[in-house]
Length: 224
Length: 398
Image 1 (tube, each protein chain N blue to C red):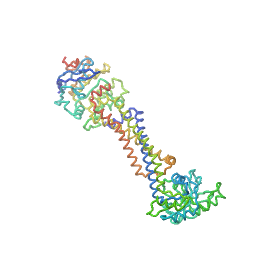
Image 2: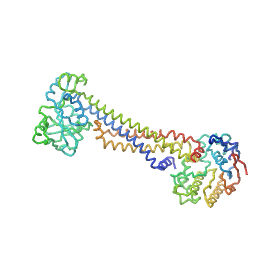
Image 3: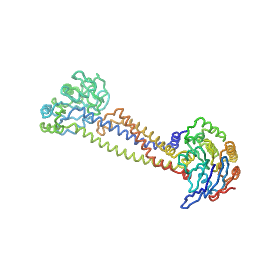
Image 4: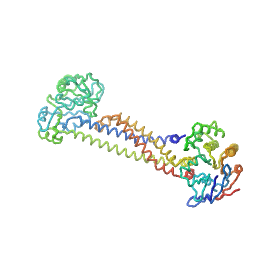
């Protein structure tokens, strides 16, 4: 389902070329759960961004469901992102002026199809309930702890029923108990709904959740 | 959830910054709107005044031209007098079709209720062609002795009595609103009434009038259509010694010159403020968008298209400028309505409050300018932001 073929990406930093992703090729079947480990700066986040079509590679292709991401125009790619995949970032990605439930429903604002507002709201409540935040629906991010904010971002990632979740250090600032709950949710979503997970982490405890584990080092990806 | 909701939420994020932007737009819009209704008011007043003044020439004592202009425009009665036989001399001048005398008498205050200056004017109803056209409700009979017709700025009911210099006068009718102080603050009476008031003032008034029986202040002249006002003025001044013939166009010209000064001030201040506001909005929005780069990257990762990002940013600017524009129009209108009199008096300009159709179209035009200013100011920052690669936006925003 996801095919990366000889993908490379170089950044310029302080006048120097940094090869973040170096000739990476891999395949990921539908419904797989892959963990990607590696030190910080090894190119994990860049690889996820490339797979999600957030940045263009210098060379190579990424094909998802037979569609080459980088041959699509911006509108098609944005719509593809909105329908097919979603991100969980390693930083706080909530909007401070929106409540928890509004943040969860945010992707629906950019959907080309007319969503049933009530149905979306029910789904958002269900997701927040699943993540233990039912009593925080109308709380603003500033009224939530770091862990609670992360759980809202996770709920948001599932609102559009994506087929792929690209998670970059999804449990970075969660306590052990919440981290374990989140990983259980990921596993359940993977098993019950067949959602494909690509999870970047440097925690081996999280990495072992994956059915496959890959390691990123110096921009190269290798199977473990 | 829709993009307009997000735009409103973003505006409320930094209320003081948004308020500052709204106020700056309001200031420019207010100035523009106030300027538009001021200019329209003055122009309407001038054109109406020139049209309905009726006279092609106003013949006054030589050397009193400036005082007469002050009387006509600012409504400050000028004590200018000349012998009544000037009227007969003027009537005989080549090209003069009709001539009617007037006598200006200063009245310190309205005796009823206000301390605004009034100007008492004696006219001859039989030969008059300047006051009668202003009558709001035409009298179905000649104006009688001890009766007056008053301008719209004098707050006295028809049929009420007013006393000037010890003489009781009955209000027989009103004139329409003209914007010319001379008419709007005028108390018009027959020469017979005025002469009697002058006589009686020696016994009844605290400050008796020192105007001789055979005095007049001006002769209003209508020329044959074949004679231009300029030529007519030359004829009058040549034939009748000791007078100055002022063409109505000269009065309008003086007003226009005043108007030009006001217009230049308004345009300069308005343009400078508009430029500052445009730059301010551009700079502030560039700052806002720099702060929000990561957010923009995130909404792009959630599936927002470039045009959605562009719409979101321009919508924020549109809402801010529309609110600012609306506030400015409201405030400008109220301020102008309340201050029109002192401002116009200070600039010695006649003024007529424009009709509702003009106010609505000026308001709509001002609002459009405000909104377009907002959109123009954010166009480039919004375009730049919407074109940014999502991952680059996220990284730069870190």
